[in-house]
Length: 126
Image (tube, rainbow, N blue to C red; front, side, top):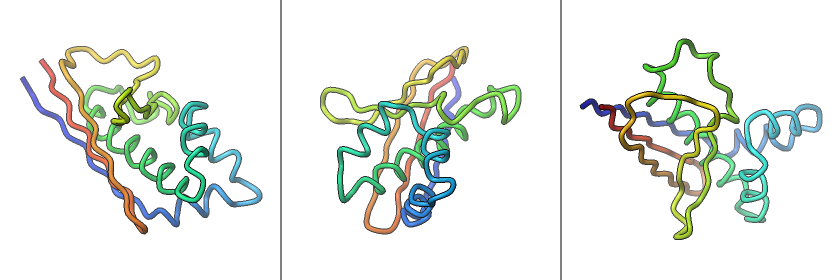
């Protein structure tokens, strides 16, 4: 058994600026986030940038945790990692079209405050 971990932190303002950019904002959002993630974040009104940033950090943390199993850093796209919430509201990972062998369990923790969002992904490999 092997435990792999990935952590990321990001400034919420950096994500807000990327999303609100008149020239590239829409492209940024549709390149990074899935439809479900966009719907979820947009439903948060005034706090939507915190949720976008938390999902961005979670995607980065996931990449760090699984990167050892990937052929290269371009073998996965942003939208191949989807952060959804289960029935209890707990964030979960949905790996879309990614075939990773020997993963027994994977866990995600995200948090955010006024300035930062942070995520940690831990996975257990056989």
